[in-house]
Length: 68
Image 1 (tube, rainbow, N blue to C red):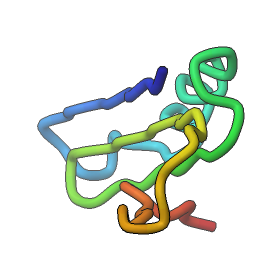
Image 2 (cartoon, rainbow, N blue to C red):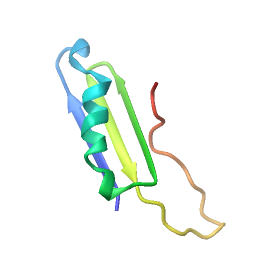
Image 3 (spheres, rainbow, N blue to C red):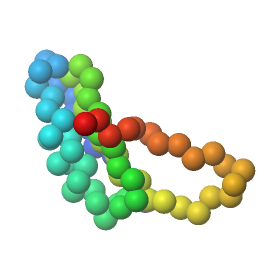
């Protein structure tokens, strides 16, 4: 299971990364293994991921990197 959050605002200054991070933190049970948040312009996105076992042939990647 994984989860995603997002905000879309008409003004870029309305997006606060803290709001997206708070929404993403509420998804903790959906994916306790990895998380990330980012914002650009009037869009803020967050995700939580649950690690699954993968064969070595499948590449691993992160959807979003944590913005600090």
